[in-house]
Length: 267
Image 1 (cartoon, rainbow, N blue to C red):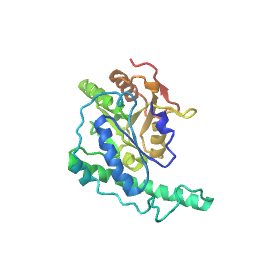
Image 2: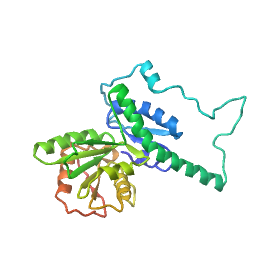
Image 3: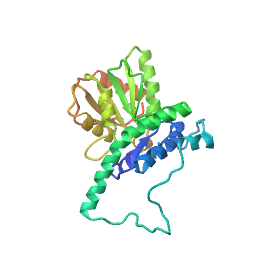
Image 4: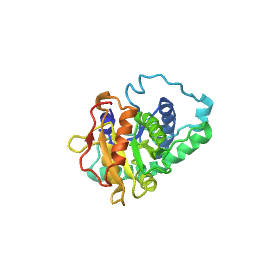
C-alpha cells in the first residue's frame, strides 16, 4: 500500500503517483524536467506488485527524443575539486527557517511546472499529464477519487456504472506533493460528493488522501468528502468494490462523515 511513501510527505520531496507502467516511464522523464526547474528532489511512486511485478507494453522514446525534451542540466552548484563547497551542512535556526521557506516557494512553483511540463510532453510524445487526471467527470455529481494503480481499475468501474445509467466519474490525483489544492478547488463543484479511496492509513487520523482533500477544500461550499480505507498490505481493490463504494456515497446524505469507512474484503 501507499503508507510507506506517504510517510515521507513532509521531507520536501515532490511525489507523483502513477497508474500504469507507461506513466511510470513518462513520469521519470517529467520528474527530471520539473526537478531541474524548481531544484527539489522528486519521488516517482508506483504500486508494488500491481505495477512493479506486472508486464505491460510501453512506448520507449528514442535517446534523441529524450535529449530534445531534457536539454543538458547545468546546476549552479556542483561537486568540483577545484571549488570545494559543503552540501547538507548543519544550519542554525535562522538559516533553517529560510531554507524551509524557500522550499515552500519552490513547491508552489512546482504546481505550474508540473502542468507546463506535462503539456510539453504531450506535444512531443502524444501523452499529456497534469496534477489531476479526470475520467468521465463532465456531468458526474459523485466521483471516485483515486491515486496510483487503482486509478486504472476505477476507470473500468466508472464504465460499468455508466452502463447502468449512473453518472459516475473518476478523479485521479497524480501529484501529492505539491498537493494540487488550487487545481482541486477549480475542478470540484458545489453539491459534489467525493468517494476518496485510500490505500493507506495514518493511525489515529484515517486515510491520508481524504485528510488532505478535506484540508484543501476547507472552507468549501456543499462538497462532501467520504473516506474509504481499503487494499492495505496488497489487498485487491476490484471493479465490484469500487462500484459499491461509489453507490454507497451516491446514496448518502451530503454531509462529511467524521471517520473513514474500512472495507476489508475484495468482493
